[in-house]
Image 1 (cartoon, rainbow, N blue to C red):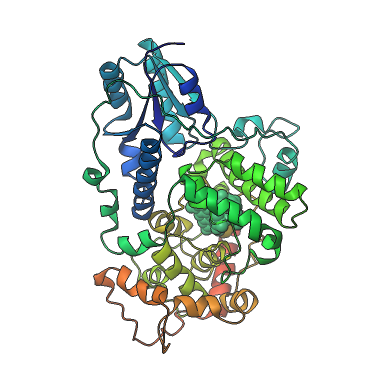
Image 2 (image 1 turned 180 degrees about the horizontal axis):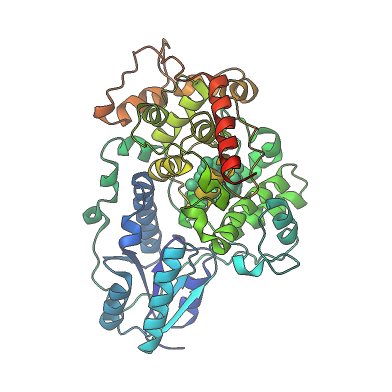
Length: 476
Ligand SMILES: Cc1cc2nc3c(=O)[nH]c(=O)nc-3n(C[C@H](O)[C@H](O)[C@H](O)COP(=O)(O)OP(=O)(O)OC[C@H]3O[C@@H](n4cnc5c(N)ncnc54)[C@H](O)[C@@H]3O)c2cc1C
């Protein structure tokens, strides 16, 4: 026990419950100073993710204030910021929750070593994942490249029960100076449409817990049957909260397990989806190139289109392909910062297969537009759909956007909700898209709905031909 303050460096763990690093900081006995640092890695995230981060930080600051704490905001190189704060507060320890993206890990390793060199007790804790990526291995000691065996390897493991929420903050005598979220203007990155996207978010740990409770009470039973229908609000809708750490995966896992034990039908399927997130981080840890390069090296020979500014790629981004399911989905993302999982697979398939566009162009667009942006899940999702990733479906299974619409939105409820053109009374969301998009796009709700920009059969044939080119290049 000591009276020297412990610094708690918040990152993707913006909550007060089930927070091992925070619990340990409090158990150390002295005051705790919570800081969020706006460093280069924060500055480089996409516009919608920045807006969502701003909201989450604001909610965390409120939650801390309500129990006697204060969230300190500082910007700059993280190591330098921590050193300055240690000197100002006479702190002896710095704790944080472990990160798993290579750039974050490199930063953290350097900081931990530098702090320890100067005699500071620097410690990192779990909390962002259920299973440490290096703790799950195949029988031969390798890493899993296929999801189902990964699931089998982890599904019966013990997962720590969530820790209780902190209800009283051990405050120092004097709070260090802080910058403000207003000064940071993280929302400014949106330029246009920020207010519209912001209104669709329910930020903060309390709201995340309420969403989980509602999901478990009302939706998980039918989750397996309804999770693929984009017109329904049938999923947990917690991916943004998990990406920011407003809720821990342990809390979600415990709730899912309880629901399974209570005989709720879709609960096991929900647990399986949580494990897809774990699988993404497992893959990232063992094959970090998944973020930027074809996971399967032979895909380097695929004749991807890389003309990122081409008109048809802009039309895909704008939700103006002329295929209603695709366009509804792209607009849903532009307005809400989220897109239904079925639709993510479809729009990605259309871009990579019918249009043969490099998956990295789609990945970057998603990274700029998603409020639930998660580097590991995004990269895994894109490469899975493109065919270049692990466990991908056979290449010839190319989603047909019309067939998918008939199957998953047979009454056109989803597409009507998101597309204004040609409708007598479009929804506010459909109109909101036209208010959110940049003026330079010059889009109008009363314009005719666009004609299909490509022929599906031709697109499919071109995709299969491109695949054959790749195979030939690889001598197969
Ligand atoms: C091309 C593409 C890009 C994607 N980009 C992201 C992204 O940037 N961020 C992100 O969180 N998810 C991403 N996903 C996965 C998935 O679409 C979302 O996690 C899901 O739509 C979130 O909705 P939900 O919270 O209601 O999920 P639920 O259906 O309630 O699932 C529960 C949780 O499981 C996890 N999960 C579910 N499906 C997946 C999956 N396929 N991969 C990884 N985790 C999953 C999420 O954390 C989710 O909150 C992407 C999928 C594709 C195909």
